[in-house]
Length: 391
Ligand SMILES: *[C@@H]1O[C@H](CO)[C@@H](O)[C@H](O)[C@H]1NC(C)=O
Image (tube, rainbow, N blue to C red):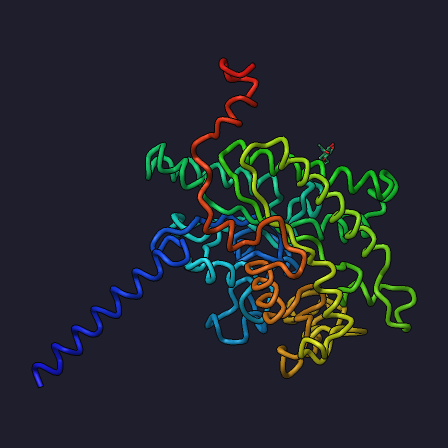
């Protein structure tokens, strides 16, 4: 018996050694240390920051049936019945769940999530009710200071440059911020407005770059006009179409962002990014749900009125009545604005592994596992106009 046990012990040890050799070596993936993960954005990625601020129920999701699918044992503030895209990405990157910035005594060593439901790129968007992108960047600065105190200058710098910065924001600037704002519509042509939003997003990227960020992931905007809430606003709603004006703004934004990222890649040394075409990816599922094993690409699982487009899920808002579907897995839309966990999971997977679905130039896996090129090549030194030995 004793020898059996010790033999068993031997086997366990050797399996552990073999597997650790494979994990560390074969794939070039660091076995214990992966990149930290910093997240900025709106309700697409908010893990519950809005639970800690003064806001309206529309910007919160800390009540039932949010979180009902049982992964978390209570509503967390995520705008979903379960996990959201950044939870899956953290899992694929071997990280624990990334805590909200406001979570008391959270450990920020693996990253922080600064996102806030309802937030926009412009500070005017839902002003006073959300943590806008500017403020999210200020909060990041605080974290950077405290990590520097904790780890020392050099290690903190390394953490910042190896980290992945994920940004998912902009929908609210176009929905409430523009389409829902007679004042903004009067002041700005759609093109000028998109330019202003993209201008501010570009500045945010530059701020993070100056603070040491090198690896960026972007979730582009979805076909906004096909969200149940906006589909219900389509004057031709009975024909079942999406709200075209909203889709056009999302497309214009995505195209402008692609152009900006291509140019930043040339002007900011070491800048690496992953951008996806969430628009086409989701549109394909909305139009062909059965192809992807969904039953319904149009209606919200939780909500009221046409398409479940009345944002009443949970009964805490102005309209208190709502219907709840039996199986969210069959739906693309969880509530009037937000997709189901299955969509979050499938898209996280696409971002992690992509291509084939227009993810590039890097996919997230490559960003998480890549090491920044530390030493400059001869070509860099010769090209660098600040270098005294350069021509
Ligand atoms: C950023 O947005 C503000 C409005 O919030 C606007 O006045 C400003 O021009 C924008 N900045 C850029 C660089 O586009």
